[in-house]
Length: 186
Image 1 (cartoon, one colour):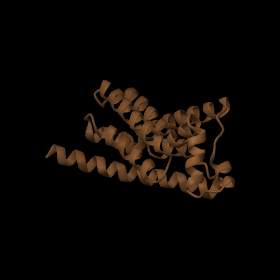
Image 2 (image 1 turned 90 degrees about the horizontal axis):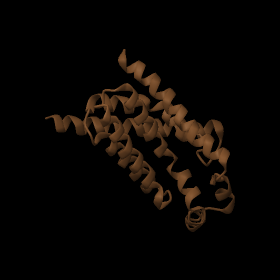
Image 3 (image 1 turned 30 degrees about the vertical axis):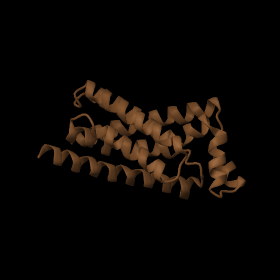
């Protein structure tokens, strides 16, 4: 019976996390009017803390966070992102699960750190465009995208972009996780 409940909770978390991602993408497209989803990882980190920490609170078992990471990996892969985008979410989910496990899924500090690491997985498309820019561009062009579109989507690999994207996502996850932690306690 516990296994069925764990599966239900994990699937529900996947759905809710995806909704948080969709809201962040919509905000990026409608309000920021960017095509490269520059702000999306940080916004998801703010919006989805309650989903993530709620899953930890209910599951308290290794594997639920990893499954959420796998779900995001499959989403990025299935939605046509560059082939290597599945790796960051998979690794972030696995590492985040191990971190939360160190605190037996009940230690707020470990759970918050776990969420911060997990949130970095949403940088997958940007990280892969930094690691393999020529292959990333070639895949976009092979899909029929224009050079103008490619130029809008690509985020240049600069120190400031790395610091802003990684630091911003970590800070947003800290804020989102802290808000969620306090909200879930009520």
